[in-house]
Picture 1: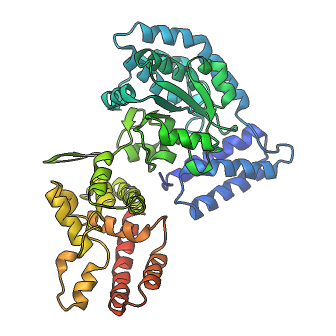
Picture 2: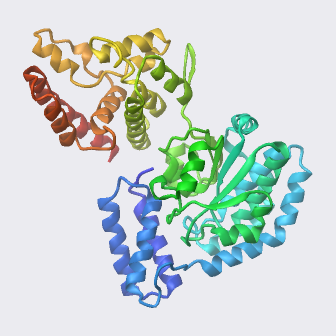
Picture 3: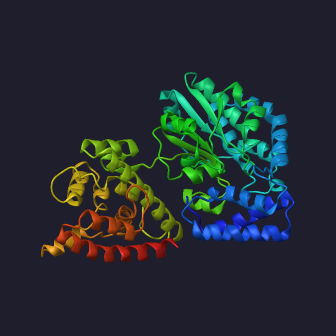
Length: 472
């Protein structure tokens, strides 16, 4: 999840709170707030939690008496643990005596996500009242059956924790998971150093998590999960775990565009407008959501596993699949941003995602691979996806052959999103100029292709202008 315009006010409030907890002067606080504004301007493509370690670094530079690692929320985390600890037995008893202990434990865990001092001030959270209100809370997104199915067939569970205090709610859920699925080995991941009020190893041990799960550190220094910054142990678990549960908004924001081999489920309470827009749910909603898009058509459902199986069926290499996954993630992210700002537009981010994932499915066959992709997807029973996979320079090639064919142009915003994402992602994000320069270097001996590339770059520049204006 990228920065929204609305993120700036939240970031400034969080920065001020950190500064006040550290005893920083107003001058120092304003100086760091100015740095956050510059960061958001220059790094709007990263997820908001990734900025937080920089805020800590900026304050450490301003306050010589506070070298890294600093822990401005230390006392508040201790108080959160203490307040929930005295009620933990009652929470476990309430769940155990309910009609469906596993379902009720999930509600308890989601409700506990309110203890988030990145989204709320400490005084704004009445933990005792929140616990009393649990029976009246209802999920707005509830992938309970898919979660049970995933856990029933998995051998290892990676549970990514979120906040101090909240770890006691997590323990209640983990106890019920162990009872319902005794063959499932749970791992509980915490942050590797203090950041906001996120849980560290000390908090997990205080809550008694080691009694039911192996505690590991993620290696992450931000209030979320950035896999490139995580430990080898965590990355290996993320890759091999049969099921993953990620608690809270920070983990959602950093993992929203991340794919995993095992199904990834998010449990949280929606606490900010931007996450509300991403999920399409109102503030305060409880969420249990499988982060795996599913497209439904007349021939059945298309999920990530089936899409990847189709790519392999038609001989697409693993490297090409990796490229297509990047295109899919890029396209879905941009589509979601546009829909959040223009809900009247006919754009389905999930459909766009699968268009990006399958746009090159015809690469393994002779002829124009764009046409091949359309025909394969039609034959496989996914005409809606077939209608949005036109990309590349096929139109310009028809012009060069003297047989201009308008049907080779993207005919909808959804198709433009797929085509633009393909141009912006190779084995990682690139600019349009970089992508077209790369094609020129690789095809410099093909004069017709070079002319088509020149023409296509102008067309894709127009797409970029149109899409960026809609997304901003």
